[in-house]
Amino acid sequence: MSLPKPSHYHLIVEHLSPTEPETCRSPVIQQLAKLLGKTAGTHLVAANPRAEIAELMGNVFPIPWANIWLRNAGIKPRSDETCFVIEPVQMVASMNNIAMRPLPVALTEAQLEDLISVLQPVLASDSADIENINGQCLLRIRRALKVNTTPLDEARNRDLRDCLPSGDDSGWVRRTMTECQMVLHELSSHPALAGTGVNGVWLWGNTQGASSGLLTQTQSHNRLVQLRTFDPWLAALMHHSNTHDNPDPLGIWHGTTQTSGLAEILTKKVTELWNGKLSHLAISLWQDSEPGRIWHLKRHHLLRFWSRPVKIDG
Image 1 (cartoon, one colour):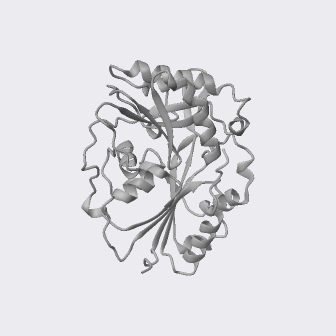
Image 2 (cartoon, helix red, strand yellow):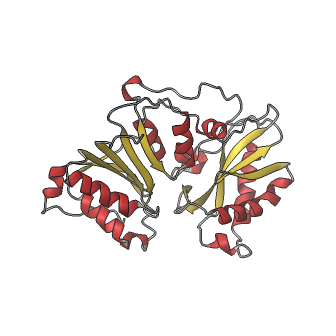
Image 3 (cartoon, helix red, strand yellow):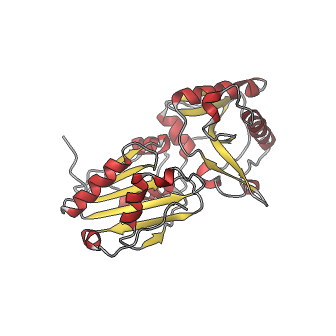
């Protein structure tokens, strides 16, 4: 049985950094900018796209992302081991600090295997192993580490000195990330990775002592969600969320400007809004250089022929 058509739809778009000029000239970016120019945007309260979607689903923070993802992948860490997520990142140096951001485009399966082959020799001396679990790198360490880490979403674009691991065994994690970064600076023998922008990795997890009760949801927002996302963390969250049937489900599309299908879904939802099949279209846009903003569109906004496009290309 098919789900009813949502009367509300939410497009959550992670736009690339303004330092990527070629992508800013794509037709879908121009279409998006023209559409957003028809109404005023406001700043988002959520810290990042993943947090925004979790909030729309009615989840109460903090959310144990690593635990949820491991449970969804069928992995239960032993008492004598530690599991960390390894996320490839771009390290960006400024005059006063070093920040980082996720890769502009997610690695393909082939590129992910190349990344693992580059990093595995670095970690082999510590009896640690990397494996590809559903398109995500998982690091398994054969001892229980006492360390607190910061998820990538909370660390990106911040001074890394404020986000580094802490605790009794934090030195091992910091040293490992530094050694991986040094190896990734020389990728001439791995041409598949050379154009990806990856020059470092971020380790995080806090997987010890995971409880069975992973999520808490607010009763007022506990609803059925139709979510289309490229993010494995959000897919795991959907799998373990306690959503209930609702005659008015919330539709959410989440991706980047490089995700296939953005132009099609944007055109489709604007057409539905124009034809009265959709009553409300929300568009969130995230850029590396500024806080996220959200635009709420209704049919009457599409009638404004004097609107001015919003500049979203930095």
